[in-house]
Amino acid sequence: MSKKKIIVDSESKMNSLVEADELLKNIPQVGDIIKAKVISASKKEVLLDFNGAMTGLVRGKELYNESEEFAGLKPGDETEATVLEPENEQGLLELSFRYAGHQKTWATLKKYRDENKAIEVKINDANKGGLLVTVNNAPGFLPVSQLSPEYYPRVQGGDKNKILEQLKSYIGKSLPVKIIDVNEEQEKLIVSEKAAWEEAQKDVLMKYKINDVVEGKITAVTDFGVFVEFGENLEGLIHISELAWQRIDDPKSLYSVGDEIKAEIIKIDGSKIFLSSKKLKDDPWKGIEKKFKLGDIVEGEILKTTPFGLFVQLDNDIHGLAHISELSEDKIASIDQFAKTGSKMKFRIVSIEPKEHRLGLSAKDLDKPYEAVKKEVKEEVAEEDVKETVKEKPAVEEEVKEEETKE
View 1 (cartoon, rainbow, N blue to C red):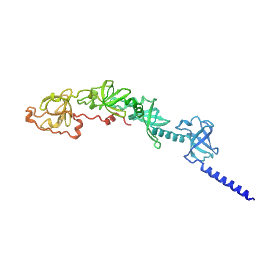
View 2: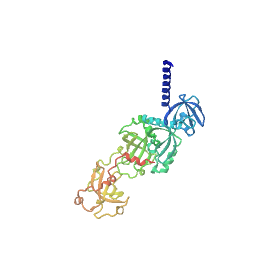
View 3: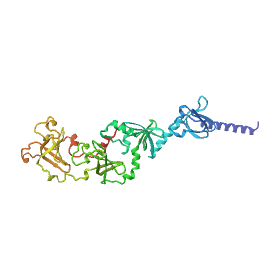
View 4: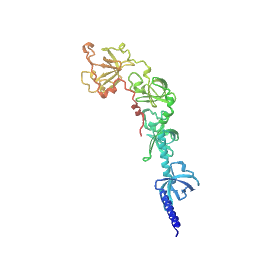
């Protein structure tokens, strides 16, 4: 044997070993997503060619997927599949469209979330917490709190059955949403129609600023205020403390859905707009000294009884508080027995604080001259009672959540 032939044989063997090594390196492993060409396709199975070296098989439930790109495959098409087994009982690659579709779908959903992209979703069903939707064939959830003013279910009294009834009326609709939470491991997908609406309304919102006066219709009346629709599908809240200068216990006693109302914008926070109707009216506490003076004996109507005293209406605009310590020298066992809502009583004015919109009353020693009973009146209202005093409550955003239904 010549030396030249030995060298050629050695090179041939070396090349064969390298090719074999490369082939081993390229054998797909479980979980790999491979690209392959369709050999044949039917409703029961699809055969795929992988690099001209291996044949793959997709069958049974693995044909069904969340991604539409695998539907309608025909010979010659290139596609992707996930490896389930490197070699099945037929010596073929066992592959899956279902798993590959699942991976691609969730990768796409994460991309939409990261890009803050608005997409269309179809509403399939509803429960008391929100809407069940489909995004790229993946199931998702649209909470009630993530609905825009146009679709938010403003139901008087918060009746959950009526809320559900309204939510069910949206079944079959398609809405633009943004993905706000996506978790492939838990298959959790949360979307927000409100976020997409806010994006679309940016230019409209920019037309408005603090102190602008708007006019609109009341869309809902709640325990903590009224919602007003104005402009181009915008909605604002007039908190109960911003409805009027005087104390209001129940907005429903003054307003109804459909009423027209004017208000001033006092705060804009994203899509949340806070309004005030009382700012368009003169503050009746200005110049109150012309109407009432310290020591005056006045008659007022009991508006409300509380464990710490009585709220009293002196006229249409001015309300006062008679603390329980100023009602009688004797201990009062039950304030409801001492005075009834709607009844009238006489009081002496013992403190006036115009800036704080507070006026203190006393029912004691009314038969004596004011100078004889004049004394420093100390604030005795307990800290937990402060929210019930005639000092107005701030229009806090947290109270809006009382209107939101949780799943």
